[in-house]
Image (tube, rainbow over all chains, first blue to last red; front, side):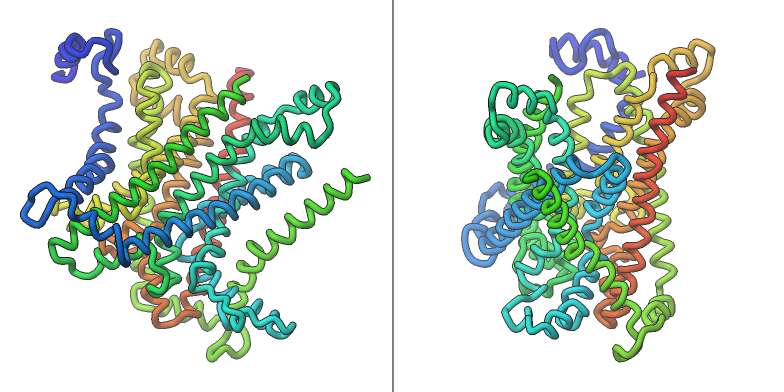
Length: 300
Length: 262
C-alpha cells in the first residue's frame, strides 16, 4: 500500500522518469528488484567502496597503487594476454565452425551440434581441468603415442601447466561459445544478398569482401569481446590446473581471500576485484554495442 | 568443382579439430579414469576409491540440495517477473535486460569478494547463502530462456481470458502460464540446477565445501580418483544439459502449434 501512494509523488517530482503513465511502482517487479539489489548491486557497490578506503576508513586511491607495478601488474598483463589469446583462437576457429555448420550441415545435424555447443560452452570448470590433465598431461595416452611417433611435446617445452596450456584448455569452451553466439549472425546474412551481388556482376570474393565481412564484423568482434571477458575472468579451471605458476588476477584474489587476510589486504583484494570489473565491463560494453549494431541488420 | 573441394576440405578440417579438441580429451580422460592401481590394467579401482572417500555422498547431496533450491528460487523469482514484463510493464524491459546481463559482465571472483565484504553475518554463517548467488549467476541464462519461451506463446490473450473468467493470479500462473511455457521453464530449471551443482568459484572463495570444491581437495591425494570424479561429473552435466537442449528445442515448438490451432 505504501508503494502505491508513494508512486505518484515521485512521478510528479521526477516528471518523465522511469515510472511513466499512471502505473504505480510495479509491485509485481518489486521482489526481482529487491533481490538483485541485495545480492548483486550491493555487493558490487560495497566492493567498489572498500577499494577506495584506507585502513582507517579514509578515502584513498592507494589500494590501486600496487597494480601499477610488480606482481599485480604482471598478473593483469598475463590475465589480459590469456583473455586475448583464447578469445582470438576461439573466435577464429569458432567462426569457421559456425560457417561450416551453417552451410553444410543438415537441419537435424545442426540441431544436434547446437545442443553440443551449448553443453560444451558451459562446461568450463573443475572437471574440464582434470579431463585435460588426463588427456594431455605428461603421462597421458595422447602424449605417449606422440612420443612413440618421435614427437615429445614435453621435451619441446610444452606444458599443460603454463599459459599456453591454460589457453589450450580454455579453447574447449571458447570455441563452442563462439559457435553459439556467432551462428545467428551468419544466419542473418541473407541468400538474396549474395544473389543480388552476383546479378550485379560481383564475384564471390566481392561478395565476401564488400558484403559479408562488413555485415558480420560487428558481430564477430562483439563475440570476441564476450570470449575475452570469459577467458579473462575464469577462475575454476585455472585454479584446478595451476599451482600458482601462472600469475592470473583471479588466482591472486583467491589466495588473498584464502589466507586469513589482515584488514589492509582485504582492501587490496577489493581493489583487484574492481580492476577486474573495469576490464570486463569495458569488454562487455563493446559486446552489447556490437549486438545492437547486428540486430539492426537482422531486423531488416 | 572448386566449390566442392572447398566444401570437403572445410568439413574435414572441422572434423579434425573437433576430434583433437573435444573427442580425444573425453575419451582419454575416460581411459585414464579406468586405469588400475599403479597404472596397471583397467578396472573400477578409481571409481570405487571415490565412493569410499569420506564425505562423497554428503557433498554430492549438499550440491544437489543447493542446486534444487537455486532452481526453485530462480523460477519463483523470474516467472512472475517475466510475466509482468510481457503483460504490463514492458517499459522496465531495458533495465531488467541490463541487470540480467550484469552477472556475465562482472567477473565471478569480484562478485565473491563483494559478497564476502557486504553480506550480513547471519547469511555468511549459513551455506544457504550460496543459493542466492547461484540464482544471480544463472540469471543471464534463465532470463533469456524464459523470455524467449514466454514470447512464443500468446501470453496476453491467455492471461486475459483466465483473469476474466475469475481466476486469481496464482492460479493463472500455475494453471495457464506454467503449462504454456513448459519447455522454457524446464530448461530454466535444469540450467540453474546444472550451474549450481557445478559452481566452484563463489563457493570456494566464500569457504564453503560443496561437491566441486571437495573434488579439488580430493585430487590432492589421488589424481586418478579426481579424474574419475571429473569424468563422472562431466557425463552428469552433459546428460543434464542434453535434456535441457532437447526439451527447450523440440517441446516449445510443438506447443506453439497447438496453441495457434486451438
